[in-house]
Image (cartoon, rainbow, N blue to C red):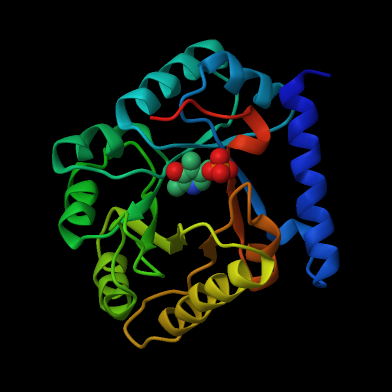
Length: 236
Ligand SMILES: *Cc1c(COP(=O)(O)O)cnc(C)c1O
């Protein structure tokens, strides 16, 4: 077994253990492998170990990897998620190359993605990024504005709104991480109950290497894990 295959197996075991600990069915939590900064060889190793969904933060790097993997493994049903900031001059690249965008925080970006999504591709699957704890990275819609943005994004023709994504500041321990993930969960439930949303949301994207157990306890349906699968990254 390769290092990446072994690491993936450990992450899957963590997810299953967390689900058992809080009485959830492990099939309700998807694992997104965050491959940013790692090359297409690393992604291929993860694919060989059964991982099909990958997250990328940097648009150009992500688009290059999508193309490399499509050339190397044309039959593999890979799913690519953009999880980093999308500047207006990058929306077309994103609309043409990714399957999901989890980092929508402005209607303008969503409108451009909807207009630029090619006809021959299925609708782009999107999540709103919510700045749940007002963290200093400043990405994400404010929680009190998330519901109205959700209703507006869900109305766009070439997008399907799947849910919300949050990246809280690192928490000092399980209980602190749980508290902020529970806040995200409450916001998700509130948006889902809103009149004006044409369909129900099914994706609560939260939890990373350090806090995936707390996120699963709070109801996460998708954990995004980089370090525990691919190893440490160089500081950007
Ligand atoms: C880098 C990143 C991750 C993965 O973080 P790890 O701590 O390496 O698991 C998850 N989500 C987003 C949005 C990221 O940028």
